[in-house]
Image 1 (spheres, rainbow, N blue to C red):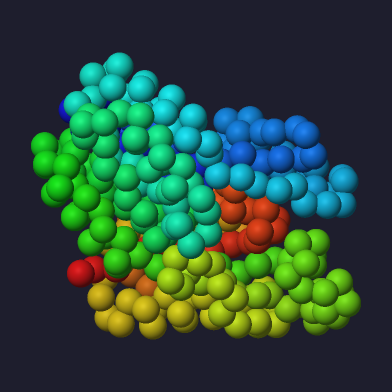
Image 2: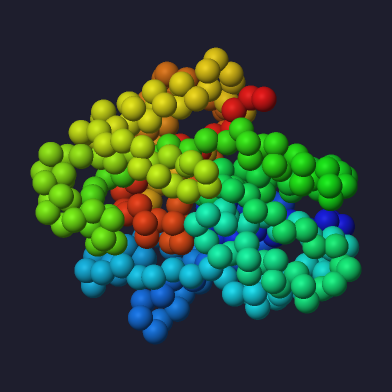
Length: 284
């Protein structure tokens, strides 16, 4: 581990191989089925999550990591040789994770822990984490790393098409009647990130039209700028994400390397199985 350690949470959707390459530890969000508690990514993934949801017919609750979970992560980083820590958390607009990380930092007075509210989630947060890790590896100072990560975060965007209204109905966000009608009409909600929160942008009929709309929105967001980094997001839909990527590349010049990222249970419980989307960093 380098002198400046980078820590985040599992709502970053950061693929395990990418996190391992930069020695980034992801503090787990928890998923709760009644009294049973599972750590996102470590004890439960999207596939196992939705197998259980579909079997039991109800959604679990989720919870931010406890301050104790962050204390453990900070202590491990210092014991591994880190002299400073930068912790980049999921948006405070959707989770108490940032507050927990700040509270935990109080147990290490004067030891150089910076806790950052990313105001992002999923791979828009993940790209900030990777930018910080790359800057740390290059020898940047803590202040330079934070500034670079924030600058990348300002250029990230996310659009996703849901496969069904079923899970929104289970969460109470739409009525079961509306969901039933919507599914009969093959309505596919499109989500985006606004002010640190996932919001419903619009509803489009049929998967092909929804995917085309996501690509159109991506193209519009770029406004002629190049796409510097790309992640294909999905929930139990890897084959669909690959199909979507081909459509995206046919319309928009994309980086040769792209991340395939599962949304992960802390977030996917809100979107439902089958969701496909894109997160990207636009040129400055």
